[in-house]
Image 1: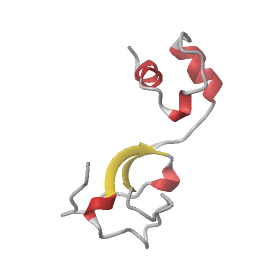
Image 2 (image 1 turned 180 degrees about the horizontal axis):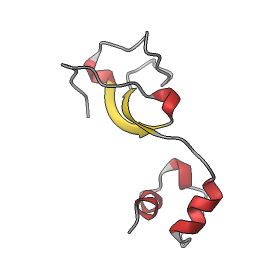
Image 3 (image 1 turned 135 degrees about the vertical axis):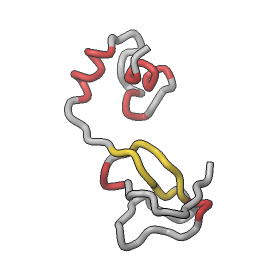
Length: 84
């Protein structure tokens, strides 16, 4: 399976409304251009999910590594630990 087909198989929100039998090329065509980035996002309680380089939480339980839209992601810093 391609990464796109795997994403669909796990019912990712981005592809949730697409045909479950669709080929990867069809899924990509329907999505259009969507930027993503791998890095740190906040997941803690009371967080709206948005990050800025100036406002990164120091609460390690509220950080995790994910692929997400670029506006939700910051670079990991040396010494950071991540929750599950």
